[in-house]
Length: 206
Image 1 (cartoon, rainbow, N blue to C red):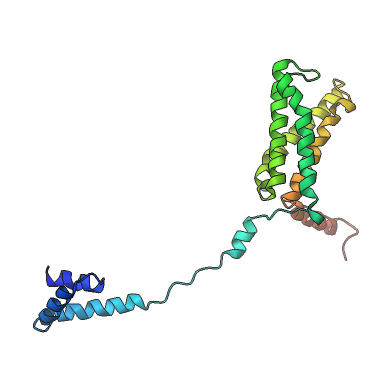
Image 2: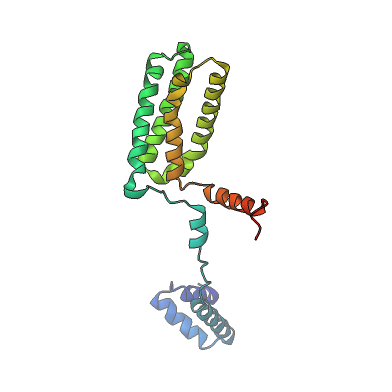
């Protein structure tokens, strides 16, 4: 093995006792290799004692992007969400399995029932793992809001009665609970906006 290779291997701690002895003997008679060995040694010490780069504190940034689950006093939100999931599942299981839904044919009834059962399963999952609530919130909100708008339109048109559409209250309650468990996202911005508007309106200037 060449002297340069032995020097590199020695710095890595990979030379045998015989190779180390041979290298030391060679360095006694070779000024060029001795200079290279000195450079290797200086570089090795520099790397060994180089201060580590400071690690930035990311706790604040991560905390701002995550929302811990809110369970309410005594943790009442979890059982409440579980109960909503059970009720919603019961309301839609008949439509999904039996294809029976007032005002709809079998095919449409099963589709509506599938949406309801899927939403019930999502609510049950949040009751089990509340920290997952924020991921379900956008989909659940979009689904329930559109269903509610459709129900109101049916009532206004006279096609359905308020009593017939009252079953959707379960979904609305579930959405409210989901929003609360997710940490009520948007509430702080809303209250700040309202407070700013109050100060802008006449009669609120000081």
